Image (cartoon, rainbow, N blue to C red; front, side, top):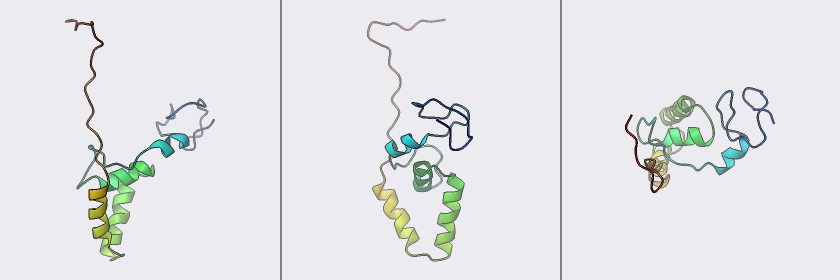
Length: 106
């Protein structure tokens, strides 16, 4: 299988291209539309849409701002609704040691 972005040969079962780091098409279908905790400017709505559609977050923010300033529909209302409806990314839990294994001090 070949990466759609860099064109290099990757493994058939790969989730991410080893060369350019982009997600492979099959993984996109399993990705959920969520507001990430990192990379936010206001509420993370644009970052969530950019991650879900695998676009540059700056492009999504610029298109959103242009549509607000041009008065396209109810863009601000749509942003607030997306802020309320889109779930936030869950907190990452710290890694725990298996039972019976003790911490070693170097």
